[in-house]
Length: 95
Image (cartoon, rainbow, N blue to C red):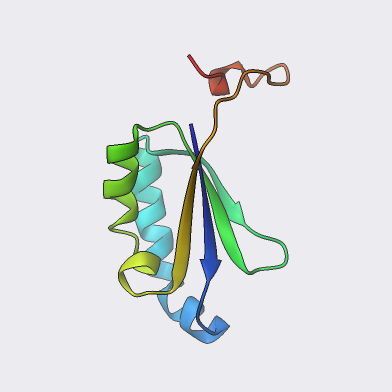
């Protein structure tokens, strides 16, 4: 599994300008099964994505994100092997 941390590198008005396109991309990526969770950081300095896709599929999807294409955010991808989860989250366990 992968945790993707997005950190904004532009002013908030530039983030807002690209936000609708980013959300549209995100909806498609969820439909394609690339992500299992997504959300904003608090405070709003970026976002986090959780992916069960293989690395090449994840990278191909991220390359299409308008935040990436337009230089809105830096992306850090961290591989994570879940070996313990709370009841109800067994689908996140590393196979």
